[in-house]
Length: 179
Image 1 (cartoon, rainbow, N blue to C red):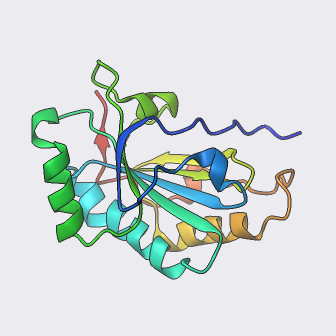
Image 2: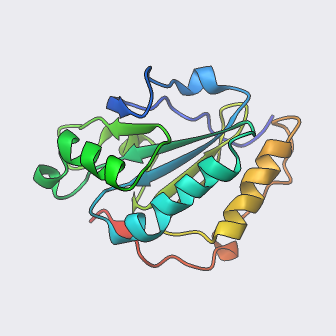
């Protein structure tokens, strides 16, 4: 038995860059890197999204699924679907992007269910569907590559040696927080 929580299914209003909606339950056997972002978040534009694109490119032949989650908790009027489509096109983002479903409050549903504090954010989900790492802010590319490589190399979900902490991360600047 392990201590990791099962990742809840993404609650989204629509998808970009995929012909069919993705379900985490159908991605078992793959590591999932869920990058949360807002298109008006400076840290997302300068670091989070380029990092997600690099992950998708460099691990394209591996059992890794990179998913962007556009989760809007501020500037709602400016971040509509047509604006996001133009943003995704201009920044040449080609990995699947989910649009977090609104909750009726300021925090979208998936963002709330995952307990995310803002953007950019990262959630790593192992091959068995367990949340193994969450972080709000930026993460060094080499550290992220190390974590993803470790999860890709796991044979079983019972390996408790994966133990990265926030102290391993060097940068937390450039983030937008929920107030």
